[in-house]
Image (cartoon, rainbow, N blue to C red; front, side, top):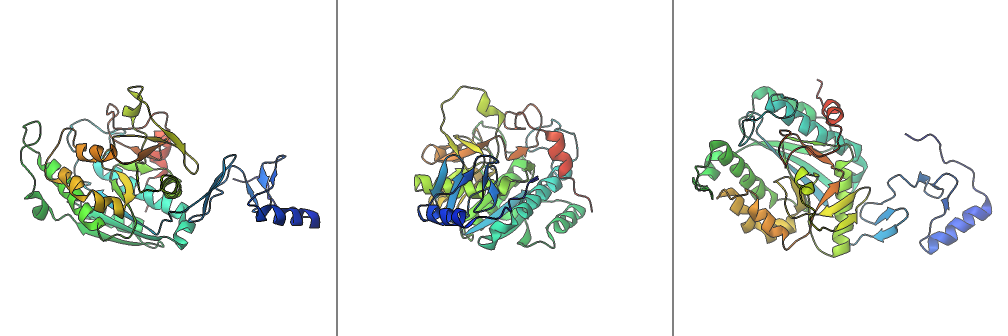
Length: 344
């Protein structure tokens, strides 16, 4: 919250100096209060302009050459299944539907926080749901209704997709019904993404998002893709496994967060339609045969393409406390959990 409004009357000479500086792409920073008088912002605020420039003090301005046109969020929901492949309790020990509802609510809150971005970026949310109860679907609709974006809720076409799944996995074990449902949902999501226009955010229903998560991912995607002159992958979560071994990595600064290059994620990630088209067959391998690890085809892609995750996390995976792909370190989980309770 701002404590000081930058509304001081500018002298003629100051106005002239500002105009001259702007001709040379410079801004005047008042070191007494860290303000930028011409744009009436402080240095710690978001100084970037979507589709035009990424600006971070003291690094300066970076021109955007890869503009984001649209964002399609594909939310994979199964509020009836406690855990996909484990019997352990999730943190806070609630019913699975409570995680699904709060997860969707956190995404909508983050979208509303960055609503201004979508004056120039098209936005759509699609839920692909498998056997969630009627009351959960009604709560989904209440969360999504009366906002500025379009949404739809689709049922998982399980019978259509599960016939393509090998019943025996890489560890020579029988693939569970829950896993077949998960693989089918991923497959339907990938098929649906081919109708998207630009960025697609594939997200599972047990990730709670911070209020700035969507804004940071969009600005960072524009910046990094402009920097490397290529498409890429972003994972919103700072997983515990990243701190088990002292592996080498690359660290870049996005819009307001540090991001590290990684070579493994789960199936919650943001990328572009171009990447989906380029690696469609590779991604579909996750939906027909259960690898060990499950996401191996995705990890193989990361050996050739850039994938980054934020430090600290933008979205927390609310699974059990012992999972190396679970809750992110040094996060206030109680705060994030309570903030995203859906109250009708």
